[in-house]
Amino acid sequence: MFRRIFGSNNIRAADQAEAALTSAATNAGETATVRRIVARLEAMPAERARFIASAAYTLARAANADFDISDDETRAIE
Image 1 (cartoon, rainbow, N blue to C red):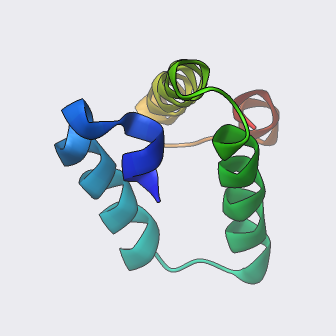
Image 2 (image 1 turned 45 degrees about the vertical axis):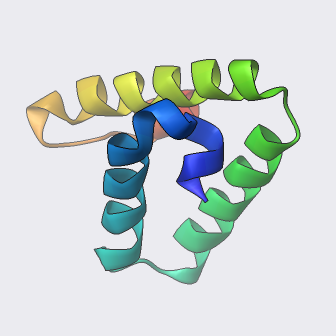
Image 3 (image 1 turned 30 degrees about the vertical axis):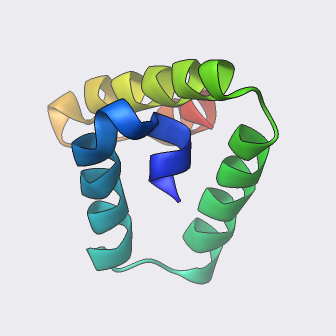
């Protein structure tokens, strides 16, 4: 799924994102959110989807810098 978003030049990053998603304990709400986000990214032109995905990834990393992601940070990322 993430290889389509990150592109063939970033297979390692795509595989890491996929592994993190599939190995993490998730609940139905989180899975539905991920599927909704992926569907929206897949509907975009590839270059735009990569830009949006990379921005969300950067925001998630920054939000998790203090080992806590608040509800406000989660809404901004989504």
